[in-house]
Image 1: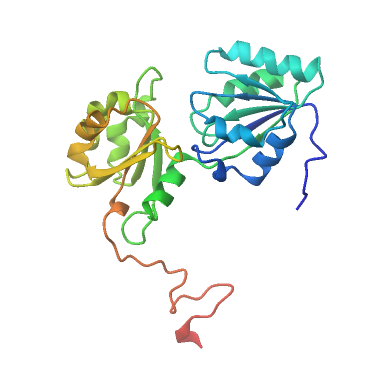
Image 2 (image 1 turned 60 degrees about the vertical axis):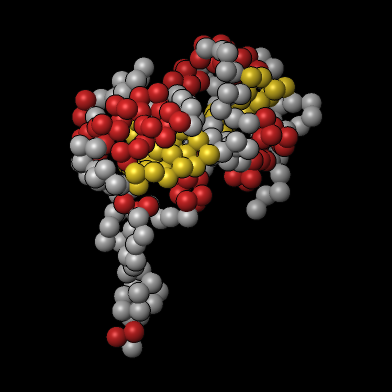
Length: 263
């Protein structure tokens, strides 16, 4: 493993900061933050503690009050005119609800080199905190990551009630402001007793996790005064279970191990 990033160049690095805990940064994210000339971060979603690994002389730019056009202009100027390395720090993983698609398109149009570095997403941090596996043999083998329609419309064929029909492990982002509607749609297919983990600001000092039956999802959200930075995990995997994977079963053989019965 390289101990430094001597190869870092004048470019934009779109980096996933994870859900909030600085210890959940990837090694590559830490290395990039440690050497970057400029760091633009979504200060409403990324805790400032993560910036402690940055160079003391790095230019730190908050972006919560800026438009996409303003952010892009800053990144392009720092790379093209000042020949600096720029980290664009996003919460969670950049592939989910981060608006990097627009940034990638505009950076490409401007011929600005860029790289995307993945991060831990909230649904992964939630499963770790809850000490569960979201894919339990014989119970659930599918994970759905989605949101309910709000300011950003969800395509008609991705409506929450339709996705709920699968009764999979469903991880619901960006939906706390519409929790009553979300609960009603989920109840069309999940039983009222299905466990829901309500996860607020995972990895932050004020983190909250509550596990309630589905029919109490909205009431709990209001009681805790949660309106943003909340993930809901609706899953039969939250129930006590004894499902067993075939992968390590003594009767299962594969490329690296013969089954007990075949020996």
